[in-house]
Image 1 (cartoon, rainbow, N blue to C red):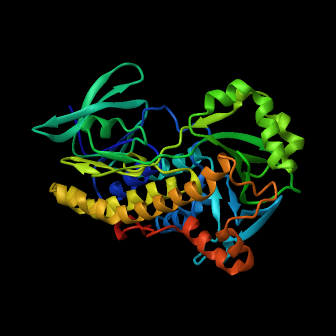
Image 2: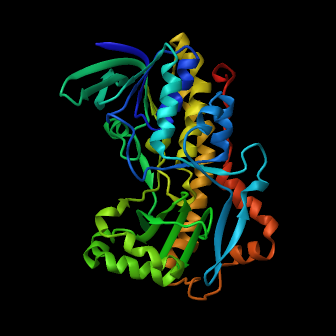
Length: 408
């Protein structure tokens, strides 16, 4: 049986950041990633200002600058028929006054390159965790299977589940979870963009329809929100129904809707919003989406996952080096990160209830001329207040900073 001090399951943003930081602390860490590369389309591509600050602290700012990405410096909030209120991100505090949109695989490749420079870091691609190893109720490692069918086990002082919203490890341990109803699922696809088009990131709210557009340079990444569980019905209606729906609320996109030739090009995100009651058990810790699945509202999932990883490394590096990790140590991670998660999920639930649900039920039609909700009207009247939503999205609640041992 192989052995490591910390086994991280899942090579997403949380897993790779945690692996990098622990390795820099002198902890032997093994990251298991079930795929052979990081190439998955329509994964979260939003890297927030607080994460960019973290990369600078880790000495990775220059490496990130070389990765192809777009800078979003403006949020467009819908306040009238074909009218948006620009929220200026350049008023944010700190060096990075923007949100970066970067293909997640490039971001993860950059983190992997930095982590591979550390002697205690081991990344196993094509290696899927298939279950937990336990001894007297304590998690002591994981069982795995490689793509070519080989099986094995890795013993670890601590196993960290970074395996996402469908976490196998949290299910295997039977950790209790609280889920909230969400009003929508999300369709992801691309539409061409020209230099004359809107910039940045914005939204359009119409009766029974809602979309978010993200400026990716020569194309828009579109999030088209549909009622929860309605994917099959929409697909039965066909691509023309999608085109007509978008043209009805965003006529400025009508001239390029033929670019979506088939609904095969449209990817479904099954939206979830949940949180574990307890993020840990003996020998096991869950962070990121494995501990708290986030709604796509605000694109904050990656940011929270990375912040979880930073807090985990700072709080657990010492106990891991000493071989003394206890459940009391793991509880410190939850105490540190739960408040930010609760507040952020609370804001997402508020937006679900006050904007998305009414829009998808036909009770809100800003694109059709209906009066915007009070918070948007207040922002339109007092634009300086736009710094509040800008800060909450781009910086977030309780941003974490790199511990001294990880800085370069």
